[in-house]
Image 1 (cartoon, rainbow, N blue to C red):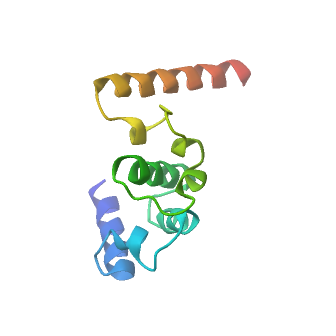
Image 2: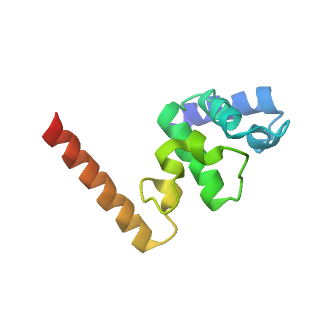
Length: 110
């Protein structure tokens, strides 16, 4: 894991001058561009990038135009799908319940 973090940090240094926030601030990107930049990060795929974008929008006030659409279901108001929705013990429980239900539904349909 340490090596993965080191690779990610090196990417941010090389591409954003070590300023992580430049991923979502440089050249005033819209939500789709921020998602594209997040997906380019080492170790970030589609789902992780969407969750991170939702986290930025829901908990950090980073709200470029179209961020909710770019984050997909993770950007929905009131959803309890991921870490982007966890703000306390109760919401953590709701996210866990959602994940259990989703896993059960996937098992029964597949």
